[in-house]
Length: 403
Length: 180
Image (cartoon, rainbow over all chains, first blue to last red; front, side, top):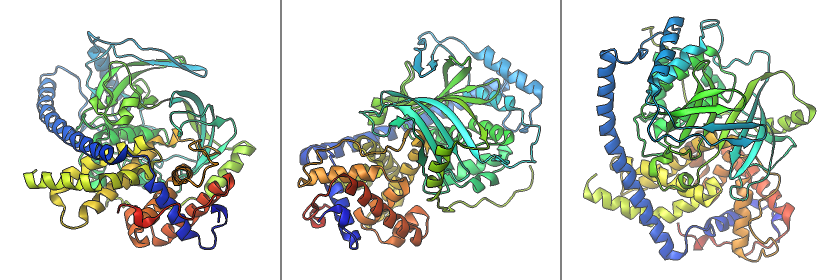
């Protein structure tokens, strides 16, 4: 009997094969090795808990110090109760604050340029002591969403069915150039070039031929640990003060700072905001609200400057296992990395293998809506769209009266 | 946490750690990612431990839910660099399918190529042997959707493996021999 002709009795054979895959998974060397792994797990869990408790104590003290500094007028920190449509002069003040606060660190590292295809980029860690909230508020203000606010949905497809993203990335030791065309249901077409990575089978294998990207479900988008359909994203408020309690309530877990945990709720929420911003065409008002609320996430640090050969510069923000670069002059997200950057303690010393090996970097070259696809990409997209499903798992809260 | 709770948590990890590591490896497609997924999920289980009735199957159910949710959130943020490949990675000598380890490796590779939801359903339904209704509840989808994913997932597995080479499956895996 062969696997290829196990019909019609496919379930028992399929289950037996899957159980073989389960039983033979290479998870440690013998009983002693697996027992040692369990003990490692226990130590790691307790170490993360101890760090979390220490950090919570520290954060409470630090928050009080920042509050005192603000009260004394030391820094110009836009109030969290500032209306989302901030006046232009406030933006200027925020940017001035960013500039004034950027002081070289004594032990900074110059950026090492990395070249991927036609783009080279670098992260340096020479600056700064600026609070991340100031950077993010400045970026939010720079979006300047007055025009059209309240008159368009959060996801602005208009009459353009495809969201085309061009990016370059590093992954598993290889370098890649990527094109993706995403549609409303999250499915799409990818077109990449780059070698298949020997160390990470998930990387690359781009041979220049379009391939379908199937999410398999419509609640592909998400914030924090909460999957969302595009319709649900559209239901979110553009007032950051109304959006924030919803973000806090997703998954019923708090967004307290936990730098010792590379996958903390705060880290996941922070990263998911960039992921959402770069996944589909969001309205300026909604992007502004997301950035204003990102400024409220505790534990984010400013680590330096990002520069690339496209002539762009950005401020580098870091939390948990994620590091991002954002241009505070226009609010554009420039790059995201889960890889190690010299001087930035990725994962804060965690021994998780992901933290040891470091992840990949994606530089967002361009993004925008397009009206049509080349023929081969269209065929791949049709294949992707044949499998979309919906699972509604989150219900928007009833509207609350204006504050 | 009280001392007896700490001891109960340790006992749980020692008894069930390997089982859930294997589940994590199948959910993620690789051992390193499976280890990371399990470690992160155990931290969350630890924080919830005092709220759980540890004399029942609550820790298993809670950990399973955290694994699935955490895996989903990781997958969402990494999907761009998970470019589908058009062939199964080289993981074993496909000429030696009488070896159940080679069969297991081939099945894991084929499983790793499936869409995330199909892979999750196959693992929960056939490896964890959960009823369709429970899988549906875990994933927040209907039982019909679970049935569809399971059917399509098995079909895709069969196609992936069948395209390579026919190989015997009799005796390839013995459910009774799997630690549950």
